[in-house]
Amino acid sequence: MISCHDAVRQLWEYLDGTVDQADRALVEEHLSRCRRCCGEMEFAQELRRLLAGPVPADIPAEVQRRLNQTLEEMDR
Amino acid sequence: MDLLDVRPGKTVEDSRTDQRESFRDLASSQLPRLYSIARRLVGDDAEDAVQDCLLKGFQRYDQLKSAESGPAWLTTILVNSCHDVGRACARRPQAIDFDDVERFSLYRKIAYEDPFPYSDSLHLDFLGEFGPEDVHAVLMRLPPLYRIPLVLVHMEGFLAKELARRLDVPLGTVLARLHRGRKLFEKELWEYAEETGLLKEGTS
Ligand SMILES: [Zn+2]
Image (spheres, rainbow over the protein chains, first blue to last red):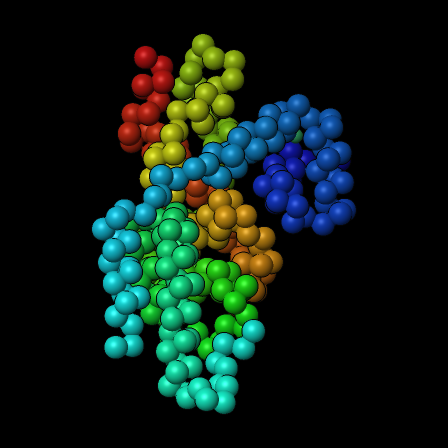
């Protein structure tokens, strides 16, 4: 079985689906036997959710106006 | 669809005017989306990045193969503009000790510091203290080189492979930057929480 260190190091890549089949199986085997790493896994999933969360990013009217002006003035 | 379509009875000048018009239509329909992506990628420099993207897109409009791929094509230009804007205003070159970053584990740090002594889910409680504005502020503390791939993969749903192609860098480089970006994000979450007193509020 791989060490906790090796399992944790690959958790994000594992969640991304960018580890190869063989490593994937090793991570899964580790997770099936190690509660501590399951905790880390749950935490990594929450972190990803936090990262993907909403950003207040509506375009301000003033910015929209300036950018539209750029478009209007192109090549004149 | 042929964008520079010179039909009989139509002068080259007419076609150029058409081209200009169709670029304007595409760009103005995409403005809110482009701005929202740029906000996530470069924060307050979003407007500059979108300006740059519009100018470059206009210059290279003849490279666009089909109208359907217009939005994706503009996104690629925007991502590169964000890289340029990010480079131009890189505040004082931050020397990051990546060995130190690599060793840092937010999970272990939280367990060790135990900011919520009465909680039996302290890791999730810690993350629960962060609102969208906080997450945005933490991301802005990362150098653009690491922040941009992180945002594109986690917020915009890009695949690392796709990113490598669009940024024209090897896949291994993108994966390495993503890895470092995540570790930095973990470290900055902790430091931000300490500096802003986020955790004190949580325990009171
Ligand atoms: Zn383990």
